[in-house]
Length: 201
Length: 201
DNA sequence: ATTCATTATTGAGTTTGCTCAGTTTTAGGA
DNA sequence: TCCTAAAACTGAGCAAACTCAATAATGAAT
Image (cartoon, rainbow over all chains, first blue to last red; front, side, top):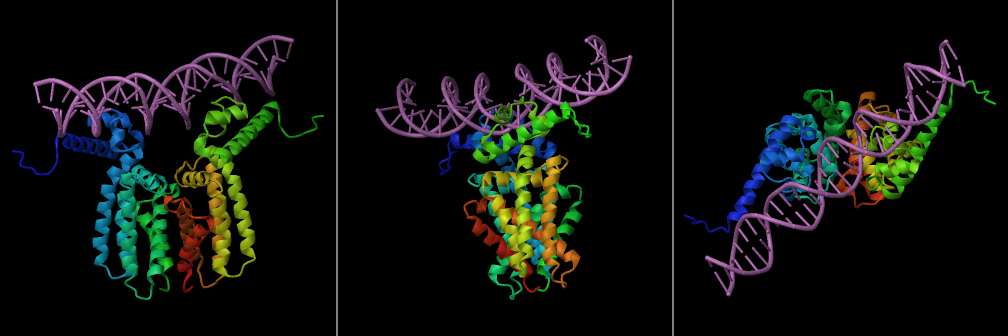
């Protein structure tokens, strides 16, 4: 055996396994109980690592949530991009991107809110945070793509509009004001605002 | 003496004085060191009350910041409203409301970010939070006022646009991405987005 | 003035995210 | 195989927001 040319020793393999156990533990516990109801100790226990070890793999509990939730966010974006490409109406296409994102951040509403909060307010130097920001950028790029189908909209204007749409989406998903609404109602609130932005264009 | 008809006994007076001491202590310490660098113990000490007493007057450290910062926010809004009323151009008028708000939340950037974060993510049942939300509503109303000067914009559209502008303002002030910008640059970023929203209207 | 129910205050104690000094494990050279 | 430096791991301990059982102050009724 061991015909593996890659420099992967026991050490590297162990690290990888630990990261996987931690990720799995955090994913399960967060989605079952919500991020606020889970202690880092519980995660460490289930991952079978020391309490301190956790923080070698993610610098904070928030980073741990980013690590876990980025996967779901990325999936939602992918679905949205695919859906949008098949829709000609601009507003409908934009909302096809928005919808899965709203949904994915409201499956466990506390987690979604905390995730987005961390994305805006957390430390952007941390690796999982960076990945989350990259995903956000990808969403804006998708908005720009749709907006640019209309050649009357300049690149600069499309970029500004995409930013504004992102801001509206963020607030509509996270604000406590909208906590009681259904996913569809939140999407409706966003659609209304985006619709007005596009009016006469 | 004591020709005061109001039912204000020693008890009520003491409570009022304590609240004032706490408010003063929090205001001074927060603005001098930033909310994250101040402990509730320090505030209690300077206000000359027990550590537990603090939480009878504000349910959390965040509520304490809301209590303190609401005053500055209200002042900024007032100035903005006054300035906007003397400006005919719609975009300029909107930005006259935005500018003081951006400024006031960037005097001590950490406090401004935490304040706005708490406004969106905190417990809206708490009294000082409610007041903050009322101030936010007042800002949106001011936006609506300006937008409604153009009778081609329906009431519903004005309300939707006002919400969107608020969202853009929130993100532009708080996002870590813009941390390095000057106040003027942040205002510029907002102006660009609001300008595009209003284009062709 | 005395009693006493109500309200306000207190600070020691709890919880929990996170740190760090000490220990164990690994890889590779002699 | 043994030695050693570097890397990884650990859990006791720290800090700080917040709680709560015990205590004190208040004011109305007698």
